[in-house]
Length: 315
Image (cartoon, rainbow, N blue to C red; front, side):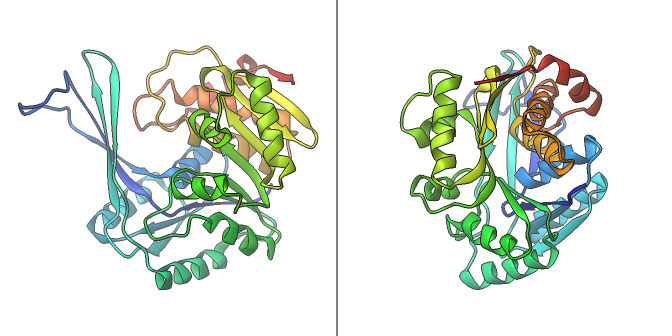
């Protein structure tokens, strides 16, 4: 089984609570908050462990919230390599309005990084890249990080025969738009990001496949995956094009669904499963994640059961 490393440059302490109604003015009495370690790579590692996989999580954290984050990660029992961040680890807040069932998510920026701190962090990351392994860069970049940092990571990993799986947003997305990121093993975009990058509506799965193939042929990634919301996800590679349909399940929260997809897909990839099977596993895992509340991720038994309910068809 191929070893997996996840990288979270901009982690967060996730707080989740609920109140009857969100409205301006009065104090809003909320439920006791739930705290979880958050950030794309951390969530991927959490979901991988739930699915029976293993990974090492590189996490950049600092300040008092960094201490809290470390305690939460200890509670999770994840193998972690902590990197010292130059400021306070951010928090994020998720509030469920119980009267309507709507979820409100508030995301804060992370600390500002300097070139010197970035160089130091890259050196520490290089120490733990698994030779011939899979390196998952997931989540946003903190302020100060170059928007084409994934390209630097590809070069760093290439020297060790490791492959990069990228699922990101924000600054790195701008570098993708400018064509300054290439050589990835896998690029995953959610529905909104894919539409923005394409500069047009992707009306059906064939449209998504055509656009994904244009990114593949441009050398951005060997495998390109575009999510299509409740419809499922499209995967394009030299081997072919496929659509995996999402399972028809009750949706409680979409938080963590993308990270759960990446965990399921990467687990299949690490086991050498065919790409259609990896896609099916990823979509089933994402379907399982939307069935859980707030910051909770997928549940293994549900994800395994839903594989049969996520059929894959060639495009």
